[in-house]
Length: 331
Image (cartoon, rainbow, N blue to C red; front, side):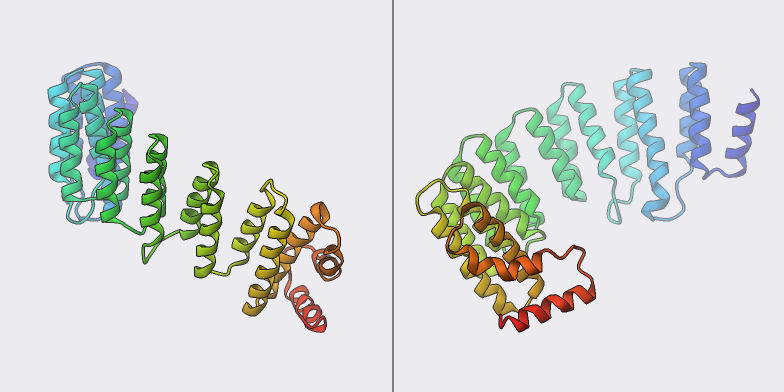
């Protein structure tokens, strides 16, 4: 009783103290009187945040979520649960911000009521009013769980219209098609993706595309992708990945082709003037020659060995020394 009085004093003195309301609700639920608990919830949610700022609304919205969960799981009243979700969604200023969590919880509630049509209606309304990354991901995941793959395709298409720069979305879409056995469709998605003018993580997308072709043992296609990627960037990690790809091939020309990649990469990286990147490439080349090389080893090892024995992280002084060694070597 003393705790209940203390909590009551807290909410009375500061109605916007949502943590105190959570304590009040918990104590009420422990008493087990449904109408009393509902009354506490109703008094709690009546304290709407004073401004349309998302940080002010976070704890408040969780009061609504707990209310909905109470109606569904404790009171076992589906109709009242639906009313709680609807009332909360009417209150949130979606033109300013939204909470994807409550939309998704509402949809999953409808799924538990064995009404996927209602769930889709909820999420369709959400995407129409306030589309977000989390909403698209949650909706797609829901359709995947129901094995509605055509609907997943439609959602992925809309998702990519919403944000065509999202490499993770392109990759997930292509992976879905690959899982479903439609290789050409997956390849087409990857092709559309790599041609986008703006991508948030292009390195992730290109790697996924190359891995896709490699897993299919389409090695010539994977090799072509490396060549196309190198037309866009001369980053040393791409050259090293390309060389490692060639080194993994099982054919008589493996060593020669891998060396050709290293030689070409070394020339291109040298043109860029980044001596740290050259060091990384030479290290990788040295390791390859140790495993597979013979007459070429002598031409690569002396410089790379003297440089690669340096420990990382490379300090400013060591970086200067590397630059001096490369200059003195005439490279």
